[in-house]
Structures are given as structure tokens and as C-alpha cells.
Image (cartoon, rainbow over all chains, first blue to last red; front, top):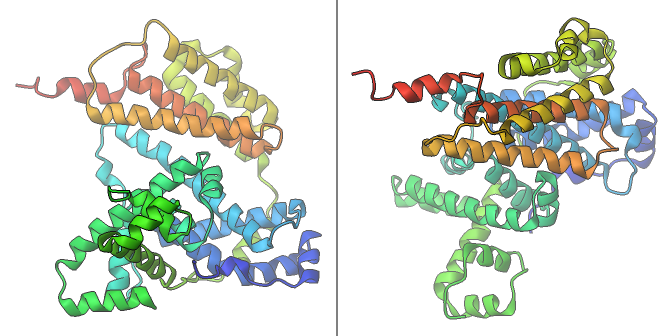
Length: 205
Length: 211
């Protein structure tokens, strides 16, 4: 099973109650707990650090404005994750319109910056391969893959998030794995055997 | 099961959701067992990617944003501007005088009124798409794919609009209807509505004709 997501960190009940009443300091504590999971999720889904920072801000502005309506029937982290994903999807829809407008203007679609153009120089070669492969996926495939394999959402939940069906999510997950496999095979074919062992080791950890 | 299972079935096996036929096949087939293991490895590798923290503490800027008066009017003006730009450039004279007036009065219109305008524009664009004057012509695969993508996106917006019409905030409704109008406008432009001269047409028609 996927590792326990950072969104399921424990939140003190009284602190949460204060946050729901609009106490700004209590909400700031929520930010301290969930800023990194939100940022990481946004970065993995959209592939760009600048966008991830903006999405983090958009998410917590929404959290501040809407936490009064949080019913408490799920962990608050799951609710914040849902807000974050809705922000990612909303941004994706806006970007889609911009992309279409660019195409209609007769310009090349290669004008879009490559996803994940700014890399963390500290990550290892194996991780770079995997992250590069992840960013090569079409955005919907990347979202389905990450939400299922890492965040542990069911296909039904992902289908609902995307306004699609569970079958759509299953099919996209299979395509994502096939695309990742192709990309990694290609990347690894240029590496030596020790690199392969290193990647396999990273996968087992 | 004689045939190898599909990737979808193997992923279901990895997740403990496959049926007995797939499970039996995987138990007996080395190739499929290895594929399931590889899928498990990919998931573990994804989960082991480092959790990346934001570069800056963004709370101060969030608080600063919250302290600013809610710029509702400016937001509404932006939404109305989208409508006017889209309507003005694509539907032109077909848009009502009332819509054009929204340009100058956008700063003070209520959200419901803007949504109503967007709904009206949406219907007008749909009318154009269903109209007899929509040209039928040969398209490149890319244009055809873009049309499919646009229709797909419109369907996604419609799912949200239909699912929770009463739960949407004013801003959400405005965003969704603005988005829908823009997508429809792009579709009208792409399919070549009369009265509009999409830039891409020049490019398409000039291909191979400049000799």
C-alpha cells in the first residue's frame, strides 16, 4: 500500500475547533503542518515550482475562507488535499484555454515551457529519471498516477475529482504505467548496469 | 485465462482487486508476475520521492492577501471583461447591447447578472455551433484532435455545473461559466463560424499555396 500521506498528520482537536471558528493563529498552525504536503502535491501534479508555490497560496486562502464549512467527517488533511487538487485542476483548465488560444493563434505548441524545467539539483540520478518520466506524462495521467499510487485514492474517488468515471481512472493508470515503463526503459538503456541496480534499490526502499 | 492479462488487470492484481482468473494466471506466469512486481516497484519508487517543501514561508503573504479588502468588484470586472472580449471578437454584432454595456458597468454588476450574461453567451455560441452556416471542411488531424479536446473540456465543465448547481459559490459559478464560454468560443472559431476569421485559417489555407 502507499505510504501514509503527509495529509494524514494528526491535528489537535481543540486547535482544529479554533481554526473552524476562524482563529487565524490556529489556521496558521494548519499551514505549518500541511504546507509541505500541499506544496509537494502541487509540484508533483503540475510539475513546476513557481506554480506549486502559487497553488500553495491559493489553497490556503481557500482554506481560510472555507474552513467554517468543513464538516469534520473526514480528516482535515484530506479536506485540505481536496482543496489543493481542486486548485490544481482549476489552474489546469485555465492553462488549457491558454494553450488552445496559442494554437488558434497559429503558434507552435512548443512555446509552453517544459514541465519540471527547474529541477532540484540534489536529487539522485535514479530519482531524476523517475521525476523526468513523471513530468513527461500527460497531465491527466500524472494526476491519476500520483493520486492513486502515492496518495492512495480509489479509482472512484479520482473519477469523481476529474468529473469522470472509475473506469477512466483505471484506464489512465494503466496507460501511465505503460508510458513510465517505456520512458524508464529508454533512459536506462543509456545507463550502465550499476545505475540500474541503483534505481532498483531506490524502488525497493 | 490463456491470454496474458492487460496492464489494467495486472494493476488490479497489484492492488488486490483482481478477479480469480487473473490471480491464477499471475501465479502461474513468470512474465506477468514480473510485471506486477515492476508495477509495485514503480509505486514504491514514487512514494520514496522526497517530499519537497516550499522554498519560502508563504504564510506572511497569505495573511497580507487576507488583509486586503476583497477585490470582488475587480474580479467581477475581469469576468465580465472575458465575456465582452470573447463576445466582441467572435460573436460581434450578435451580442446584445446589454452585454456591450457590461464593459463600462462591469465594476458594479452583481455576480448573478454576470453569470446570466455568461449563460446567455454560452447559449448563443451553442446556437452558432448548431446553426446551418457552420462550415464543413477538411481538417488536419491536429485540428480535429483540438475539437475533440475542446468538447471534452466542455463536458467536464458541464459535469460540475450539473452536479452541484446550488452549492457553487458566485466565484465558482463565474469561473465555470467563463471557462465554458471561452471553450465554446474557441470551438466556434475552430469550426469556422461565419463572421469570424480565425487566424489559423490563414495559416492552413496558405500552406502550399505560396508558390
